[in-house]
Length: 283
Ligand SMILES: CC(=O)CC(=O)SCCNC(=O)CCNC(=O)[C@H](O)C(C)(C)COP(=O)(O)OP(=O)(O)OC[C@H]1O[C@@H](n2cnc3c(N)ncnc32)[C@H](O)[C@@H]1OP(=O)(O)O
Ligand SMILES: NC(=O)C1=CN([C@@H]2O[C@H](COP(=O)(O)OP(=O)(O)OC[C@H]3O[C@@H](n4cnc5c(N)ncnc54)[C@H](OP(=O)(O)O)[C@@H]3O)[C@@H](O)[C@H]2O)C=CC1
Image (cartoon, rainbow, N blue to C red; front, side):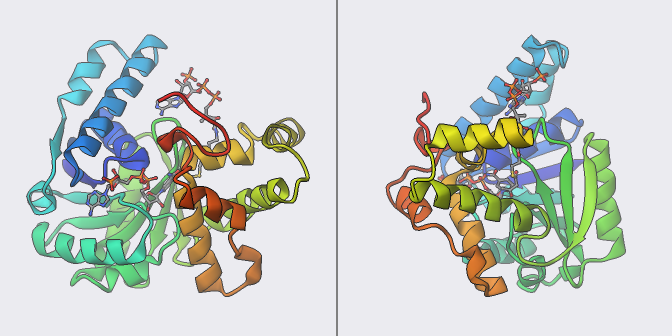
């Protein structure tokens, strides 16, 4: 695999492009919005410079890595030469279904189409294409350059060859892939999101202030960051979308999203990416 196209230059897409380019692949980063694309490319530069400043990579690697990434605002053009496409657009099922129809038409027949979805069924996404055996979940964790895990999700029709290719690539990128079956929220968000949601309920019910909730989980459970800080890192819109998938698909009230989470999203308080969530952030 040599050429990877990442669709979506947001929180996850720029991180996926970053690690793929660092792994020596030729990367095309696609975002329909030229400003969003530029922000994504700038974030990659900032994160590479931080890695160089900390001595994690050679200074010369910054420009060399950036040189392997080109930006594109047209999806069909961006995927025309791809061996692998990794989709990282917002967590909305209809958006992903329609995008995968386009990818199926525009990408080479042999290309693997992967989704970075947090919770949406890979089987359902694959069913929108004529190549369900080459559709798979390749779920990176945030922040992508730092986190070890890639959750690899097999849809019902995903072939062994596709799974093996994505597991091998994840290892080549220095990650540890774990294979799981297709089920709402897979393993990661089936377990993580109820904890985050419960923290938001605790805040809503006045059990404690955000800082206290986070400190309890950090110092009491040794989590690297508290659940509300983590929700701000993930994006509150993304958290809400994932909880809605869990609630709808598993049909159990324990996954109902907190009304306070809904209110924050409605207000545009999306966490770090919008400058305000449970906490406030510099631009
Ligand atoms: C929603 C989904 O579908 C799935 C998900 O992704 S859920 C979210 C999963 N992620 C988590 O749970 C993250 C939990 N938090 C953490 O692990 C840590 O708090 C953290 C790694 C994010 C930050 O760690 P920290 O010690 O608090 O901060 P900091 O010292 O600034 O960063 C640690 C290292 O990461 C690096 N880093 C942080 N963000 C980075 C980024 N975006 N790019 C590159 N490097 C980054 C820092 O440079 C630092 O590097 P060194 O160890 O080489 O010095
Ligand atoms: N945030 C996280 O911690 C994690 C998220 N994920 C998953 O990754 C995916 C992306 O999430 P995240 O990066 O947080 O989302 P963001 O909202 O940060 O980024 C999404 C990007 O996709 C762009 N976009 C929207 N529609 C299209 C399109 N049709 N074609 C190309 N680009 C498009 C958006 O542009 P614009 O802003 O202009 O609409 C935006 O730049 C989701 O499925 C999410 O569940 C997985 C792991 C962790």
